[in-house]
Length: 421
Image (tube, rainbow, N blue to C red; front, side, top):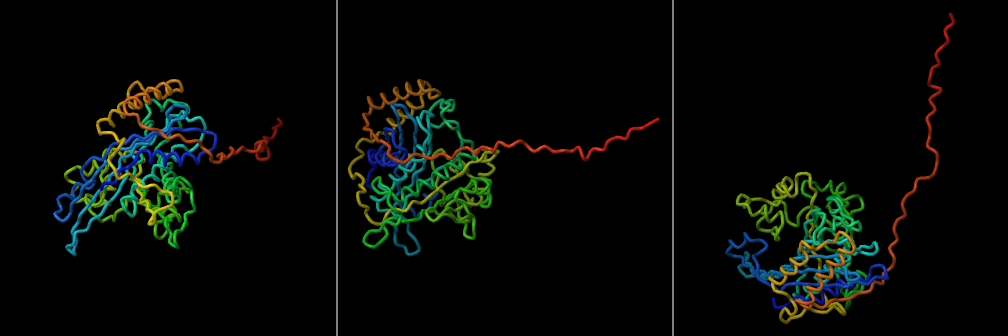
């Protein structure tokens, strides 16, 4: 696994996605990432299997978007590349490479100058960048995973008090992520070199971009028929005989593993995740996937009145080299930070003096952070000017100005007879 990620390529893919936002806006994209470093397997219990071996490398990625030198959006992800060897019934060792990305945080500061889906397009650009890396490794698909849990702020301190920030509740966040994943996967499958192409693009008579990604969603404590209630009728979930929906994203309810499978053998255990903390307990060795979901529904993090969701998708990789799609660098991790330096970046952005509650404070905090990055690491940036169509907002529905109906009850009132003496 000599292929490495190019942070400039990630920034360029994100910038290409942002370019589709309504015209007249200028953004700067910064990407900070670590070099690859060895970590424990995402299915740690499988190390006790004598017929299975795995080497896993990980990197951390932080994407920041600025407008007029002010931080407006950010995304942090953890990427894992695993090389596995397994001896099956044929007694012939089988080698496989798997790429999985866990989106850990997405946040906005409330300082975006105009209403537009900036965070959604940032996620789409990042997911699209995963194709570049995965294609160079010659894998058929890349896994995109996330755990949706509502919090007032994830990256930008005190931004929950910014009047320009729209904070979502737990149900709103789950719905937002479902729509965002739908858009990101569709965008990535129809994108090449930053330009949207028809999904049915063909090369030499063979389709080179798959038109279907498989995505999974589960809300602990809700069943498949409650999906429409949780996510809304317009979510893309139309539960039928096979439980699938959408021609471009094949949505399925649940985790991406059979219900009867042993959870420790198949469920990926990402850092700082409720599933990982639950499976770390000694009495979970024999839990099936179905039992894991049952216990998640009553856990402190996913139960107790909370509405959280797990999203997982397998994004197909083009089977033919796409025109203009750059490959990954096959040299050393030039420009990537050490794990210790990356922690310094996080300390700087989570510093207690950072304040995004108002415009002046947000600009001061952004300037202090970017000066730290420039002076210590000198990481290049990618600028982008948007040129997309304007977003048409649905006008509010105004009730007709008609007088309210008045019930005339006079005919139902009996008049008391006058009594003459």
